[in-house]
Image (tube, rainbow, N blue to C red):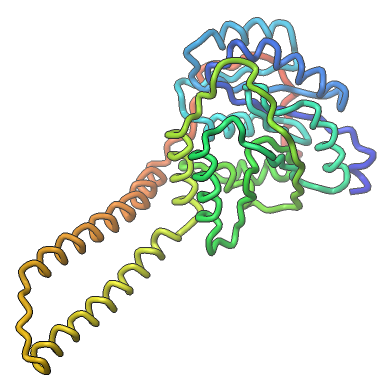
Length: 325
C-alpha cells in the first residue's frame, strides 16, 4: 500500500460497445481527458461487439486522432460478457477500469476510484443508487435474482454492482486465468476475491438512444449467473422430491386407513389422473433444469474461444512482455 501511494500507474479503460456510434464520438475524448489527469500512460480499449451501425467508421476516425486508443472489432455479436473478456485480455495497464459505452458511468468518479486503489483496495466497484431507468418489474426481478444467486453460496455477489469498476493488475491476471465459456462477469469478479471496496454512484442519462439490453437480455444473463454460480435449483429439486415423497406416503397411509379401519372404498380414478399430471409436470420441470446445467457442460467441453477478433486498430499502451528468468 505504501508503494501505491507514491506510484503513478498506467491505466487501461475497457469499454464494450454495441451500436454506440452516436455516443462514442463525445465519450472517448471525455474519458481520455479524465484519464490524462490521473496518469501520463493511459489507453482506452473499445471492443466493438458486432455493431450494425457506424461504430467502425467512428472508431477509425478516433483512432487516427488519439494514439492512446485501441479498437477491437469482434467477428460477430458475442455478447457483453465475451466483449468485456476481450478488452480485459488486451489491457496492459497497472490498473484496469471497466465502463459502459452509453455514457451512464460518470468519469468524475475515476479519481475517487484511483484514490481507493492507492489506499490499498485491489477492486473498487461502483454500486448504483437508483434504477430509475428500469421498469418496476425489472427492478423487482433484479432484487430477487441477487437473493437467489447468493442463497447458500460461499461467493457473495454484491447487489446493484455492475461492471463499472477499477481493478489492480493482479486481479486482471486472475480473471484472465478463468477460461469458462458461459461467463457471468459479476460472479467472476466476486469469485477471484482480493481486497474489494464499494463506491456509490448515480447513473447518468444515456448519451444517446435506448439501451440495447432489455428485459429478455437481463433474464438470459440472470439465468447464466444462477446456473454458473448457484446449485440452488438442484437443491430445490431435491427438497421438492423429498416433500412430495412425504406427502405421497402420508396420503397412502390415509387411504389405507380409510379402507381398513373405516371401511370406506375411495374412488381412485380422479386421484390417479390428477396425481399423474402433477408428478409429470414436476418431472418435466426437473428434467428441464437438469438440461440447462448439462447444456452448459456441453458448451464448456467444446472449448471454443469466447470471442474472435476480426480487426484491431490503434496503439494503446506498449505490450508488456513477461520477465525473462
